[in-house]
Image (cartoon, rainbow over all chains, first blue to last red; front, top):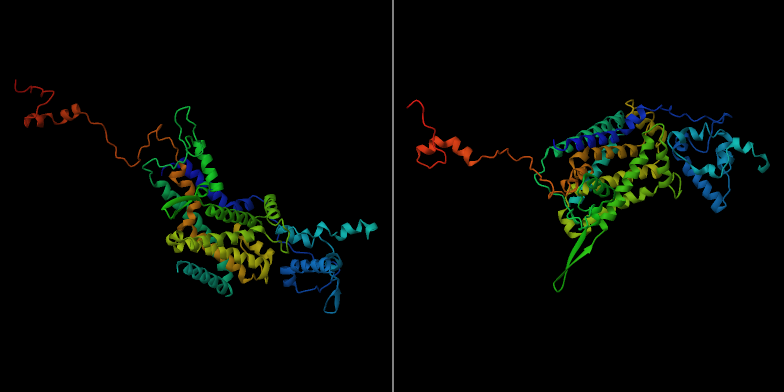
Length: 133
Length: 340
């Protein structure tokens, strides 16, 4: 083979780049597969089924955001006789009160950074800001 | 028709994965066995191709230049276009790989009445290639969030930048559109330009259609067909793949297996196709040789070893026969001792 001193390091770089996930994960501490915390209050029912919520909760939240903020449609959603006001803090966080153990567990695992919390406050932060409530 | 076959081939692949993954037990074939096989074909095949290229001798010094080569001191040397040192070659190669300078130089010739021929700069290929390749790069880097645990900071930066418009949920990425656009533009260039269409083959169209479909299935999975697409399950499988402990925790939608199978097909197809230009660009003698043929002699590596043979040596070898045949010699035969 000609030009070995260039080709062999080049091939080594190629193999290292392609196998990057292998050695990155081998040298780092893996986190456990996240298990989002169930509502501390023991509620069993949500606005939709678990698979639907797991896959598409962000779509619903986005639709609620648009309905409330852009169309002034604040009509509450009623599912199985229970009424949910459209809102992250008004509906979701009422049961799933711990953002760190519920939302963040999966979001951090999958590097999802929703911008909900640019405006919203978690229940924990809200409790420290009584004057504004 | 060549492009129609590409569509048919990709459709067949989609059908295989879409239907096959629904058979019980088959997710392990599509989700575990085939990805391992594909990446091994990709790595092994790429290394093999590069080694084969490395074994091929370069008989001539054939660098392409488009600037003044190094000459006398008062003639300005164009270091980038006619590189004379290894550093200059590296600089030229870097810009070639990163900015596709040789595509930027593309010209289009046309004949008008007169007859008059004109040469016009044609930057379309360069522009489409830039859109396509950089979208592809960003998408590959973005996907690292599904393979790496914990996720390094730069993946987050790329995602933030790519989703900077903050449209919709899940967040819409700029590269979602640009990769599809890049594929469509490169494909339609092959169709629309007559002479390019004439020289285009099935293996020019097929990768474009395949990559377009990979991007499309990815987009559909992210925004539309979300049934059973739970990112945590998918990441568990993919991290499992790269730590050699793959598990399929729960049922994953068929669109995921279609996407993955098409990626496997692309990886396995890579070493046998024109897509090897990712390594070939570094191996092109026209790009990676120095323009120093006036200063340094380039020896063809397959030249036979021919030693100099002087007339005196020739006569030494054949003197007896020459004398026998009556051919004049410069140095007579030594008188034979035993006759005296």
